[in-house]
Image 1 (cartoon, rainbow, N blue to C red):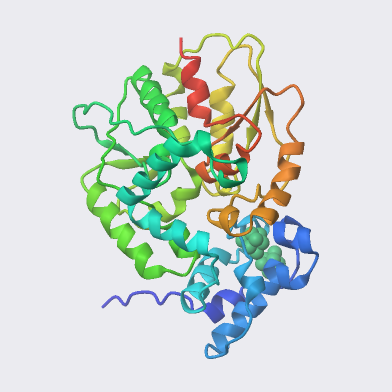
Image 2: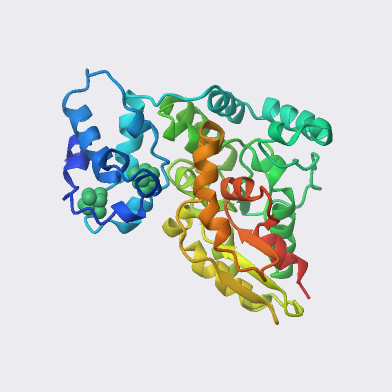
Length: 363
Ligand code: SF4
Ligand code: SF4
């Protein structure tokens, strides 16, 4: 008789940390604050304590301040499952959220209302003072013509419905050029990652169940945003693949015209490290003749980090500054494959999804 393996407890997860401190210089909040409590090691110690003494109450502001960027995980030689520990801890010790973060979370879970709000925001955007424009102007609603049923489905998500339309259309164009296709099922919603990181596990589970029903029957779900990838692959019940990685497997079929010496900067989102999308994105862009691509040196998390940009705009701006400063002067455009980073970095910079840029140069 087979017994299911017991998943590690929070205390077990925390014990994986050998306290070496190698993650500290990779943690954006530690770099900003220079305090152990704002480091992964400090937070793991606190989470270990909370696992042993769950009834304790108090001020967990340093845990709440964690961006969930997972940069510590990529640097950790002991393979500490930091995100799992964080999500499980926050499910019992929910972070304190700002009003704007609560509103954003609620809207992300109610997509038709979210789209209604974004449509209104689009209409009044030209009349708003810049301080009332937390996000760029969204695109108008667009329903693509229904195609014959494909075995691939494209993940649309929540805010990306209005903010990623051009990238999705570009992806469909590239797929077509490679002799392939994909559906855009309309009955899908948020991946639930923001809800997970906010400790709202019931809401995340309900969003996952809705997406699971939408995507059942497809061979795979193709995802454009690296930030949504992890939550989806753990929840939709069908294989999930990065859109750039999918195209890279068909790269030989794509022909591009010359970019005539243009220079672009490529931003690598923190979450790309978990899906190997950075390398394939660079590889695909390198197929465009006469294009200079500068991969940005690692200047830390851009500060977008899901809801962080709404809850702590000043800290988000401080984290963004070194990323923007790393862009070479001659680069006329910034490319980034994650919706949250693009929304945050677009303040004062032209930012596109790499797919949009590539489709523009299709021969
Ligand atoms: S997830 Fe990011 S902000 Fe949180 S401890 Fe790890 S590196 Fe620091
Ligand atoms: S690198 Fe890993 S083991 Fe070392 S302190 Fe950070 S989380 Fe702990």
